[in-house]
Image (cartoon, rainbow, N blue to C red; front, top):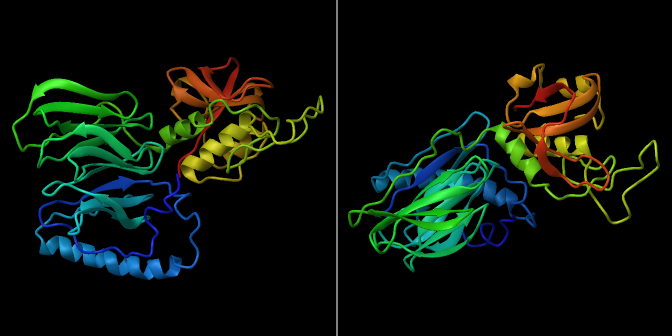
Length: 348
């Protein structure tokens, strides 16, 4: 989604973190292909400003006695979220700096999480007293009233979604799920306290899961012979045996086109062959010989041989995969095909 209109505006980042709130930070790979839409003339100015503002942010956090988290990953970066002294939510980090222009309730702090498919999601108590979520997955008011003076906790899920735990204005613990909505857990909470939340048994991130999420995002796209690039679906070209080609104006993917897109989207790796030549794929990843060693996000090959496979898919886990199978069959999730001949794992 585009950030234009939310962050890259002529108004500057104002002030420091509010004295009665605490900043939080996340680490991990964060995708930001769309945030530069429509931005030209102010980029260099912001690069200079961001370096100055970051120093001011850290200094202000120390001044107000806040524990400013500044965590980094070798292949990613960080994003922090805090309530400024203007009362507005600020998102600040390596790849995105700006005022969201979202008003927050005093004496509360936001929570932020790295999404499995890349990007971030924040949750906070708005100045209306409602739980609001803001980020790459969703921007909006959940219409769930929160207890005054409390803050929500957010955790990402492996499928690209997230959950938020918060004390409702009834004094009970609630969960807001990005897939299924709100649920009362029927647990009374001490007034003025805030819950914590973490994902158990599964990592919310990882490039393998990000590859799966990218493939899943293409669900329902039509099959087009030769369709698909690192940027997404294309019309492709005429099939060699039949001369068939997608109609003008129709874009889609074939099996390797889907894999090319998913790997590029999740890892930034490009230059993979749009063909069944396995060694060309293995040259940019790690070859997997046995089906029992598969992990989510592995690109799986079927029939023929590794040097000349006939079909490819994106392994989801649990014996399932995403693929673009044939004419008339859109991108879908299904059981692994027969005739496994190898796989390649991609990590940046």
